[in-house]
Image (cartoon, rainbow, N blue to C red; front, side):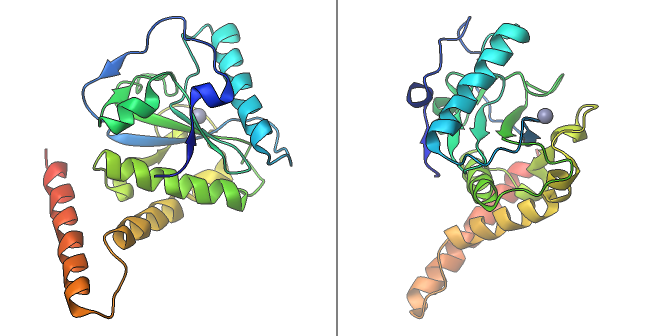
Length: 214
Ligand SMILES: [Zn+2]
C-alpha cells in the first residue's frame, strides 16, 4: 500500500454531512486531472495545500458535502485521502460515495491527479504514485486493471483527464497488472519458493476471474 496522507494530515474541515458508505466495493477506478496549473512545487506542504484548496472549492463553490474525490495525487507524487471515510472504506472493501463522476458515483472511485494534461506530460513522481495507488485499489477491491481503470471522459462529457493522461491509460493498466503479478512473489532461484509464487499467482487469478463473471 502506498503512503496515503490522511485528512487530519492535510487539515481537512469536517464534511457538511456524514459520508455515505455502500457495503460493496467500487467496480471502476476513474482517473481525473484537477485542471489546475502545472506547478513546479513538488513539496508535501504544497500537496496538503492543494487538498485544502480542492475541498474549499468543492464545498463553497460547488456546494457539495465534502471534497468530491476519494483520493488526490500531487505533481510531487504525494497521495492524500479525499472524501471523509475513504481510507477506512477501502480497507473494508467498501465504497464511500464521492462526487466525481455524474451519475456514476454509486459504483466508482475517483483519483484526482494534480495538473492539466491536455498537452503537458505527466510528471514521473505523479505517475509512479498513480501506478502504486491503482495496484493497491485493484488488490483491495479485487479488480482487474485491464477493465477497471477508466478515464473520466469514458463516463461524462469532459476533457478530463486530458488527452495526454487519457492516452496513457493503456500503459497504466499494463504497469498496474505487472505490479500485481510481481506482488505474488518475485522470481526465486529456489524451486520451492518459485512454485509457491506461481501457485499464489494462479490462485489470485482464479479468484479474480471468478469474481468477474458475476
Ligand atoms: Zn474528471
